[in-house]
Image (spheres, rainbow, N blue to C red):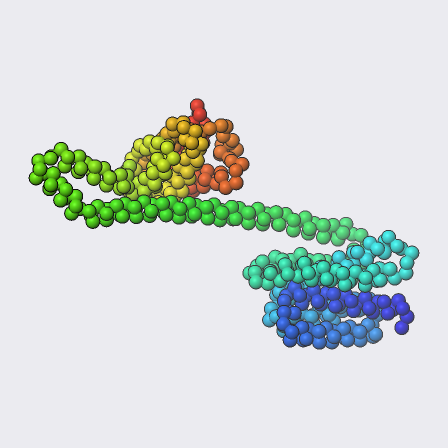
Length: 430
């Protein structure tokens, strides 16, 4: 056998091993030792049958029956090793697409060195092992992860390799449409790439929107958990104080009895007033009939008092309204958290700060009522706005206003943020 023919045989065997190894690696068929043994036995049989075809028929016929001699047996082999028809087929199609890199690099070398005989096939042989190692190291793990995805995702992943496989055989192997330079044929794969890129953009945009909603939901849940923890802590403190007063009730009564017996009425009154004030200071402040709002406002009132900020709360709200307790928590907690954050540097500098909170619930005949809320707080420096929404360059900030807008939009309401005379003003209805 002459050298050129030997190179052709070696090149055909190399591309078969290249594609077979990639296909098996893509579908996880080489995970265990027994599977590896069966795979290499199957590859040896395929190479033997390929060699027989090589001896009997000419090169053109070999190219046409290649799918029957190599791809179909490889599909059956991978199905036996993995138990998966669809992903075995997708793996073979993907490996065929990866073989294009090997062929194109060889064509590039052949174009650069046209005077060398058999340069394309020699280059293909030279590129086989380096490319195979690169793809097995970097591409195969990423492709294998898709095995556990839904069938729809697997089909989407395999669509481009399947189109390329069909295009290559229909225009280059079974016909000469590509070599004749038909514009429709030449522009087909670039058009497919353009369409795939567009689909990728739309899919990525949709996924990013979903991730944004999930992040917002997570942040809202974390906020609600933190608010619930503060409320539970306040209730525990109130209960502990009540238990303490119950425990000391006998001592209080004995002291009062002693005051009365000694006709020290004024001292007894003062003592009673002091005890009542202590009890009153620990109970949940009642601002309206809605218990959830009372708990949230009481919690923030105590936080504001600790940092030296006054909280002026006015409004009426029934116990049952059309806005859920979770959404009330998101609205009030985010708005008051932002207001306290804005007042903190002013309070630390000794400036008197007051946060004004006003709310109103308007009942509508035969419809859900409307909640109106206004929060005003002093602010320091310039507030940056984008499309009417305040933004912050500090990491972790700016999410609160987004959560407020999301809740308002869900109820079909409206909200506005603006500054006036050194005051930041939030107004919303829903």
